[in-house]
Length: 389
Ligand SMILES: *[C@@H]1O[C@H](CO)[C@@H](O)[C@H](O)[C@H]1NC(C)=O
Ligand SMILES: *[C@@H]1O[C@H](CO)[C@@H](O)[C@H](O)[C@H]1NC(C)=O
Ligand SMILES: *[C@@H]1O[C@H](CO)[C@@H](O)[C@H](O)[C@H]1NC(C)=O
Image 1 (cartoon, protein in one colour):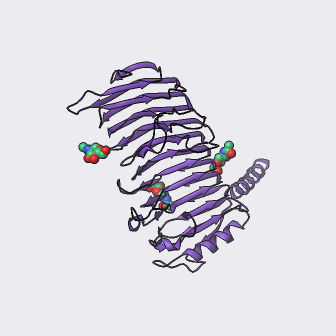
Image 2: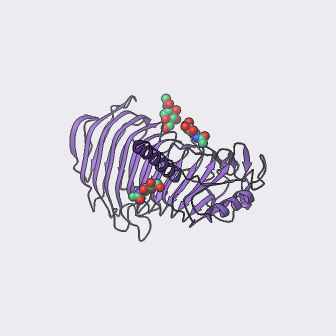
Image 3: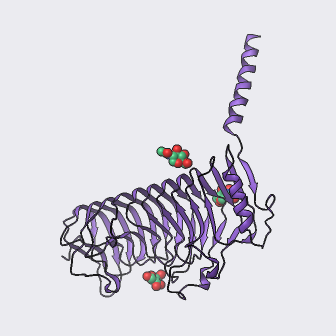
């Protein structure tokens, strides 16, 4: 009897606690509840669903079911009353016509805590209609500003007009299983650009685009990029730094277990000459496979495209604590390793270890250049480390 009672009590407790833990978020279906229709514009239904969801306690979920929809520029703003998920199963198509855009992005999330963006849907930026035709800045596909403690999972960003994803002033955000695609010759279509953000993880994602796969501006700290496949594109880049006033330090970047194919650069740190002073420190690139990559490993402190700067005045960005470890594959150019540091402030604490980058061209073999840096050299070195000074 006593035993039975105890079991019954336990069961009641168990049911109670699991139902509390599994409390379902309130669902806001853009089609079922808000009048959205396949092949039509869902700007208003989505905006209204978001507003209601955001004002709901106890968790909410906005659902865009499978199907193709047109969507104008939207601002999905917080703060919200509780955790909020946007689950996009369908394909969203941006307007091709620029006159629809009153601000610099298509889908924008601002000041949301505990956001989940999921559902494996596609954000089709329809960039083909505008690439190369306009001088000014084009809209960014998806913007995240001041987003905290959030997860972006499984979505596809396709043919953005400008950057695909822009992450600014965010904290503790994981981007997972993303698929980012645009043609290799589409201008300024950086895959993920981030600025002034802390504790960002980009994991297990595929990026093929016309500019940097991932680029980090100033003020980023504690960043992890892991298991990312890049190509076509311009590679994974920290910088360019030192172009603007009041830039904040970049500290703590790890790029691990990545693959780059047919990209214009591999892993790169770049700073402008004639720059203001700044810091880029604690940046580690490890276990990276490159295939047919131009400039596989590059620190470029004389980055001055189109002669936009006074190239003879050295960069004042101090680069330190950098490692390139276990980086192998093939280089598309003879200059496989280039560590070009500032004459004014040489790089410090740089380590290159286990490098194996082959170059097949008739002007071969591959070279390794080191200026204003004395790296620690460990393990295998192909090309032989710092053959050019
Ligand atoms: C998204 O794709 C992943 C991997 O293919 C799958 O496990 C998951 O169930 C999908 N999610 C949705 C909402 O379709
Ligand atoms: C980071 O965000 C995730 C996802 O919302 C959350 O589970 C985790 O507790 C957060 N971590 C910190 C340190 O706040
Ligand atoms: C190597 O990469 C370049 C782009 O940098 C591309 O044009 C070329 O087709 C690639 N070669 C092979 C064999 O894939």
